Length: 99
Image 1 (cartoon, one colour):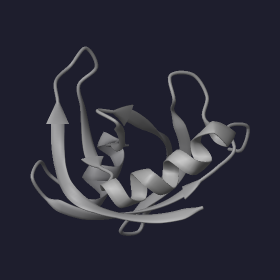
Image 2: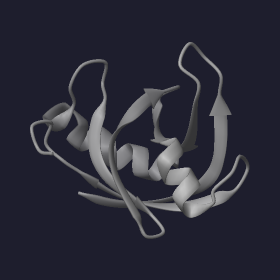
Image 3: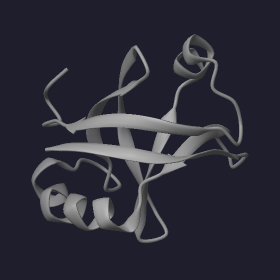
């Protein structure tokens, strides 16, 4: 399953501070259909992603009935992405054992 997510970068300072992009509701509905097949611990959905020319692996985090994409510092630095920027994230859902 491939998705394109466009959204604003936001920061959560919780117990593990991180930058995220929220997945829009329509894409979350699509993810809900495949999540039971690929999800592992805490409802995480493994994905490969790309912002600009920078590829990465991560997992979508469930949050408030939807999902968020964590953006690693290395990805943000490589692409010059900062808090409040609107980015396009290309995602491919993968099986948990795929690397």
